[in-house]
Image 1 (cartoon, rainbow, N blue to C red):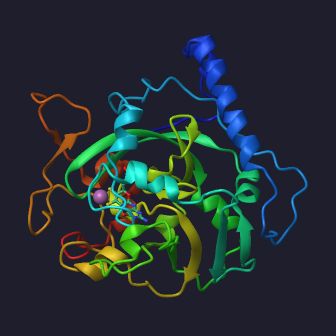
Image 2: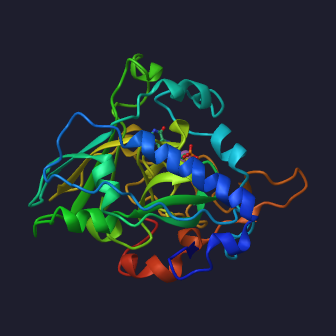
Amino acid sequence: MIIKTDKTIPASEITDPLVFQQRRKIIKALLASALLPAGIVPVSANTELQPRWPEPTDSTDSGGLGPTTPAELVKNYTNYYEFSFNKEDSTELAQRLPTANWTIEIGGEVEKPGHYQLEDILSRQTLREYVYRFRCVEAWSMVVPWVGFPLAELIKWVKPLSGAKFVKFTSVYDPGSMPKQRIDAMLNWPYVEALRIDEAVHPLTILAAGMYGDVLPKQNGAALRLVVPWKYGFKSIKAIVKIELLQRAPMTTWHEFAPSEYGFYANVNPSVPHPRWSQFSERQLGSGFFTPRRQTELYNGYGEQVASLYSDMDLRHFY
Ligand SMILES: Nc1nc2c(c(=O)[nH]1)N[C@H]1C(S)=C(S)[C@@H](COP(=O)(O)O)O[C@H]1N2
Ligand SMILES: [Mo]
């Protein structure tokens, strides 16, 4: 894991200057288009909408995680069940989802509930690049440079009340643009996920609005998604429209569908197999046919940072 902070070497020093300038221009253009007037007024008006995007870094520098997965693979091999049950079709289908003027409802056990414009939220945060290993429960993995900010910062800002013990996330419900929400699919819509509050405020837990130095592609969860790098990918919910702080654990989509296969915790753990396959190793996206599978690590390799959250728990029971 590497978090690019302001203290790291400026990307301009490690990236070809011309490429660097072009990417900066792209980001500026995207930001300008995202800053058009939005429909819903945030709880507190913000006069200076100036999201600070990080300077893109050389994408081959992933700080010891191995090479970052080529962006084209990450954009064209996605799990997005609202659009398709295969990993290729959502690349095109997801382009129908309107993501401009995105708003997030924040409610439950907070002092400042409301409907917030995403741009207003982003303008209060320092966006940084977080290069994380990402492990799907289906036993494939990738290394992705996300652009985002710690979820803890948003939670702090809405002032959690003492009763807040869990955080529930809800994806967009838009059957007009999401074909699988129109059929009687196996999953209940909208897609819902949740974290314990201590997991939610852990510094590794981020909300991502971009990846590879660019705005998040729709098929990867625009306008805003969660990324929890020590848990199986299904916890990292896409296209979030609602965040609620709750006293009790809510039901979540995959857990409801198959409780014996998908636990609430879903911490990456090579010694707790899925009932239908082993979690001992993983196929690295983009690796060659003869490349050996990677041995999956407990907590996806982030144990040093997160193991203390689960020190008193039987991981076989709380899978
Ligand atoms: N709303 C929503 N979020 C979702 C999913 C989904 O189908 N719908 N799939 C999950 C699963 S199973 C994985 S592995 C990751 C995949 O993220 P990616 O497609 O950007 O690689 O998103 C997760 N978030
Ligand atoms: Mo997944």
